[in-house]
Image (cartoon, rainbow, N blue to C red):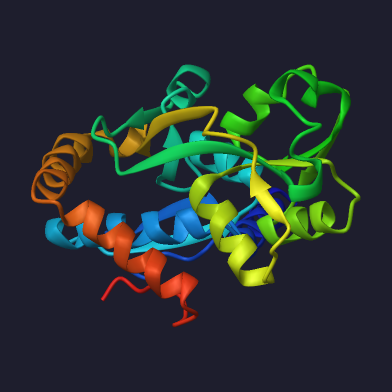
Length: 245
């Protein structure tokens, strides 16, 4: 009976998580349906290539990504804000930023003069589930909607079913472009600008200094900035998803 139980658990794990074709392949989880994470994927894939380590990116919901990365079921978290290390001590931060997150509130253009940051708490506000920055910003808000994708949130906003969407500058701009929205605008300047980092589960902590050195080199040479600019241009002009090639 015990053998059958372990066999069942093995089958469940194989089904639930991406396979590692080789022992040295790292599986990195990330938030699904986010253009920002697509860009981070290019950056980190190139960084790992310089170490000779293949990586497999596993997109899932924001909350589940943190659960499986912090528990060691996968090897790390692709890109998160700095506060993550305070709440998930098993995730070790690579201390060189790989992206920058600019938090922005989006509203319908017709409502821009009536909405200010101070009255958002009483309005219908949407954000992408599992985004720590958005969860912190909307803490105490009365009427929240946690969406599964940026396009879902911006469709609801354009249709008048949400009053505002809390997003980041990259994901927001791309969702607006993808949906062809002309009546959705930022509510002023970004409410927060902060660096984002790659995280590894503590079992892979030995790789942190090497990755930090590589990212520092890429940042210093301007390569990171160039990757972001090229990927954004490809997305906005409809040339398809960016690639790591």
